[in-house]
Length: 159
Image 1 (tube, rainbow, N blue to C red):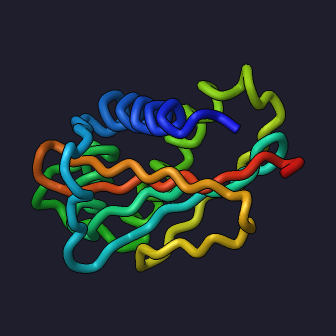
Image 2: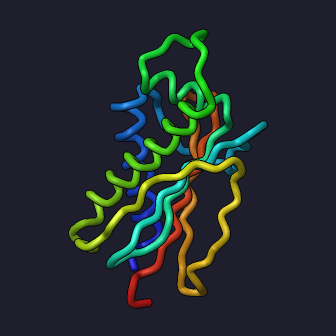
């Protein structure tokens, strides 16, 4: 299994790459306890299987999700945006971050297949991968104002 600290670094590096280049938002990790996501939350998740299997989740408040979607779509802050478009954007964020993680881990795990992302309201992931599964959580701030949580739940396929 990859080292926990290295995997946390991989997740945050992948997230920074996606958020800075595609969403135009800075991602800074929190040195304290995880920042709290307040209000209604959206959780974008994407599963993967192969040499490594599990789930990546990106959780943000609904208001933050709307900012992310508007940045991705080049919209002005005051423009209206549907919940469907907001959910699509969060699903795409999960997809892009997982793609970046997959690229970074391909030397160790060359055969990893990624699913289609899904978005749900809520934020709790249940571990259904068994006792040998490992969960890495990286908490951060987006543009120093909104909390974001990246969860990477995985196990090696032969575990």
